[in-house]
Amino acid sequence: MLKLGLLSLLDRRVTLALTVASIALSVAMILGIERLRSEARDGFTDTVSGIDLIVAARGNHVQILMATVFGVGSTSNTISGATYGRLATLPEVAWAVPLAHGDNHLGYPVVGTTAAYFDRYRYAGDVPLAFASGTPFASAQEAVVGAEVARRVGYAVGTQIVNAHGAGDVAFDVHDEAPFLVTGILQRTGTPVDRMVFVSLDGFATIHAETRAAALGAGPLGRAPARPGGETRSGAPEHGPSGHDGHGDAHRDAPTHGGAAQPREEAHGQAGALGRLNAVYLGLKSRSSVLSLQRFVAEYPHEPLSALLPAVTLLELWSLTAVAENSLRLVALAVVVTGMLGMLTMLSATLEARRREFAILRSVGAAPRHVFALIVFEAAAITSAGLVCGVGLFYIAVLVADPWLAAHFGLRMGLAAPSVREWGVLLLVGAFGLLASLFPAYRVYRHTLADGLTLRI
Image 1 (cartoon, rainbow, N blue to C red):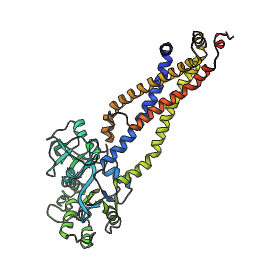
Image 2 (image 1 turned 180 degrees about the vertical axis):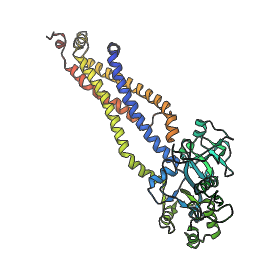
Image 3 (image 1 turned 90 degrees about the vertical axis):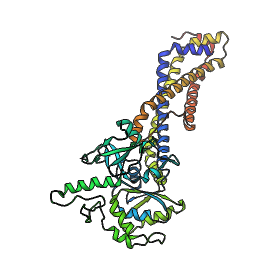
Image 4 (image 1 turned 180 degrees about the horizontal axis):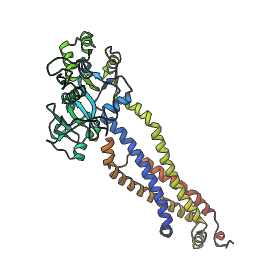
């Protein structure tokens, strides 16, 4: 019966190929959606695994997370360097890393930070950043590039790069007067870090201070260009948007969280050296203090701040994307159902033409259950072929799409074996195919021997 079933399928090879193709496409689509969803969630979680709190100007938490961690979009406002100095000296804080955004390099986000970023950042649980070559930046004119940037553009240690003001591919102020020297290339992490360029805060602030001075005509009027932190080269403080903005005086006299007093020289120095920041990563000595510190930041009197827990904010992000995820799943499920209905249509449409075939099988000793099993076997063979081709098509799509997804979104799908959930999807499709075969098989089972041998006009 197995041999007869295979020969019967080969006799209808064109229809069989179309049916298998429809099932394979549906299987590849539903596996792709499931893998992309799970990898996106795992990748996002791995990216923020080492950060306890992110402090930024008050705004939408999801927007802040996407801008500061994933390099997508921007924060609604900035915070002062004095606030960073205040946060860094809180007794609950083990470490603090400042971040400044607003520039890009060939469409890749540029992050102004300190060398502590490379020591403190963790991904995939507790994996630290490592350098494939070179070292962290040590001066204001040096930069570190991610693995994907180096690979796609062909950078090596010693290359000079020029950044531009603007997010994404928008570059409306190219800083070609201040090139950076690449001193290090990070190892691949599978996170958005691979698509970023890192410079020191001093270099980041210097470029923007000189750009503002030039825009205001400071040079021709005899006013010295501003240094990072808002001081002119003559040493006089400049109270501008990127320098000491007056918060420092208030911060000196403010009581510190936990009762410790902050040295006024340190607060003033942080404000002057760093200027305006987009965010601060915080690592805590004990995670039990995260809620009290979050409340302190929310009630901070000197400027409106938000302190977000990355894991909780990711849940907010998933709640926003749940509708889109479910819609994609429904579309994939509809495609699977369409493929199964195509198989059912093919089997049912051929029953009338095969009445004589079944009658001959009955006449040479085949029982009704044998003919029933023949139809079920054919459906199982078609479904199995569709599943195998669908899995193969899925992995081909992964090979093609993985570099593009990594370059543009920092997502790595990888060629891992199917997960438990994906195996469940495959078993569900297989079971649905067998169920679809029961209707035509039952119709054949009900046919009598005389029915197939009687000529119908």
